[in-house]
Image 1 (cartoon, rainbow, N blue to C red):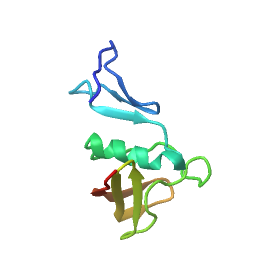
Image 2 (image 1 turned 135 degrees about the vertical axis):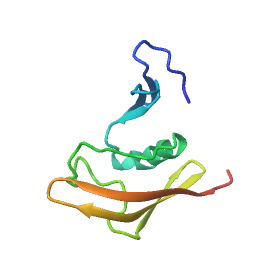
Image 3 (image 1 turned 60 degrees about the vertical axis):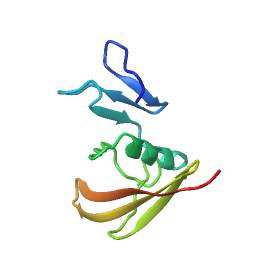
Image 4 (image 1 turned 120 degrees about the vertical axis):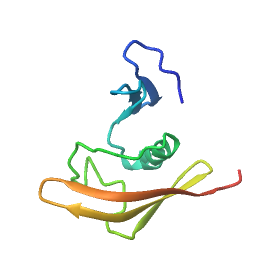
Length: 115
């Protein structure tokens, strides 16, 4: 992890996200912008590397500015590559209401290609 040496307890993970302090730890939360299609793979790489177990999204999914960056239906998978790292995101199950969505995803590294 990058060092967090400033007074606010935050540190950059990349240009669109950073670790910030929480109740128990100076590196408890990641605050990130909604990824665009060209950064979906980098977003999932960050989730994998930082061992994230919960994502909370506060933006609407409208298909234009804020597109979904996960599979649409249960059992479906999406594959992403960052450099040599190959990742698979699978929708396990979900609940969709008029005002919010909740679902379980599985993220696994499914290979590292030789360079």
